[in-house]
Length: 293
Image (cartoon, rainbow, N blue to C red):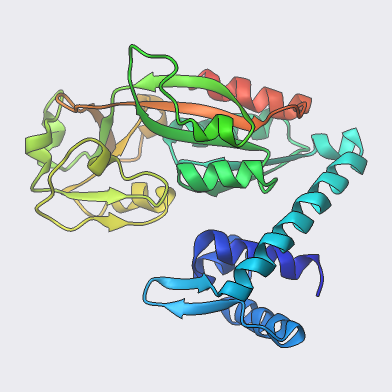
């Protein structure tokens, strides 16, 4: 058993799926399954059992995972404590919701800090908070329903996990559409007009459901970048997102329209571990994000 095995087990427990864990770990699913079997044989216990929804820990497996995650947290802390400031400044690991302005921020950051590696992992709110609190990501970008008149209406889980937070912005949802969509000619779109369309959602953000759209068509769920690409072929499709500037959509054949009657506002927030000083590069990325490009 080594630290890689512990990381594998922790990722499987987090995602509830060997396939998803393998994708997040950038390894093949057969290789990950083999590593789990070898570890189970070495320990003499069954760590996971299959369910109709994926995998879940056995009682023995859960006990092992809790201890393993404690070891992993100590390892990350030790690694961070002795990593030189220069090395730490060359790495940026980000977890969070997919959005156009975030893609643009990563592009701007890549130009600004060309010698700094950057890794973005798409994840929903709770997974992002977990990734940051457990040291898998330096910075998280979370999105949640918000009250425009209450600046403190954020998930209490952020405080409970010991995370610092910085507001990116509160926005009314918009809809990204193909320029060939029949709704593209309207200045705004209504929830009623979208009910016959197909939502293209992402694992990190199901904007249609959050906005109160009652669907009469199936939803296609794919990673955020693929969701945007699909809009070019699914002509009646839409993607609920934060406002997207014309410059980002130029030449794409896509347009962005405000959702006129959504009952919700949404908040994007940056989170990182409390008490941990961000490197100059990490701080710069946060500042770029907050400009919303």
